[in-house]
Image (cartoon, rainbow, N blue to C red; front, side):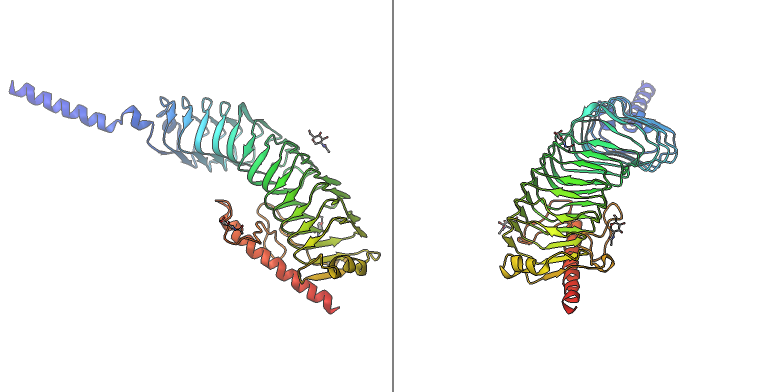
Length: 425
Ligand SMILES: *[C@@H]1O[C@H](CO)[C@@H](O)[C@H](O)[C@H]1NC(C)=O
Ligand SMILES: *[C@@H]1O[C@H](CO)[C@@H](O)[C@H](O)[C@H]1NC(C)=O
Ligand SMILES: *[C@@H]1O[C@H](CO)[C@@H](O)[C@H](O)[C@H]1NC(C)=O
């Protein structure tokens, strides 16, 4: 009797211990995974809803499949493998946090065929990945980043609204159609195939936009820009954004060496600067028939003979014109804008018949090198909050806004210095 009850007690204790070690299914489905192989993913096969975060750094395997999981409440991050050729999550419909697949030099196959919803999605540095297709239709993403892939297009994006979107260094991508109507943060399209046609004709509103290295652009529906918008080193010959009414920061158009024509038919207010520089084929600064007020500076440099600002009544910053043309009429410009006090800022300069090599870069002209932009005096003022220093920029953009306000001040210092130079002549 005694012996059997001891055995019973011991075996019960052992069973309890075993149960402790082998976490119950509900624990498995909410415990974070920091793993490196298929076994780590197989352990959560039974979890339709997985409540944790999966992080794999440099998994030394060639294939990974996340089977069975339909929704992840944390993040799914797989990074830095030089062996991984295939990653599949065929049933995965939603990720509440971040989904990031990045820095896999051999990844050829990516299956996210059921994905419809994710807070933040990053596909970055996947230099052999040719096919990106969200077969179920990816309809909700706040922050989307697709960078350095071999994809020639992206299937199944059905986005109406985004916070931010970066499409960069996809050097084989010749066409991209953006379905979104609104982007509440940054749109950054840089360094893809320089044959890229970027169609964002549905886009009505964007906070901040940067376009570089494009062969064509369609922004025909764009009505409002809350902060800066810039066009650098593009190959298109004309730029028509005829529905935009207001730009809440700086409009910069620089180094587009095929550009011959611009038009912004409804644009009436620019809260930052108007900066147009080094577009070597642009003969005339025109296409601003409604432009009434510019709260920043007008900074124009190039080969133009003419300008047309028929409605311009109020420039609160200064004005600086640099042109190679010998027929540009500086005295007339001065009469029209400076002596009549349209231009209210103290900075003033107009030089014609210049050698292009002696021109100072216009505001935001520099930083043409690639993502993020370079530093230097001419670097792009990313955020310009001229009137309300207490208003803070959007979350997440804080450092860039600090750096930007410094570079903006840099631009003004450069501008002032440049003008002192020109006045001394
Ligand atoms: C831009 O897109 C709109 C809408 O699809 C279209 O009507 C228009 O012709 C396009 N513009 C150019 C220049 O391709
Ligand atoms: C002017 O634009 C061309 C074409 O993008 C570029 O190669 C050149 O470096 C630019 N010059 C300056 C001074 O920025
Ligand atoms: C400045 O921004 C702050 C914070 O966003 C806001 O409360 C205030 O009304 C703004 N003031 C002006 C003059 O716009």
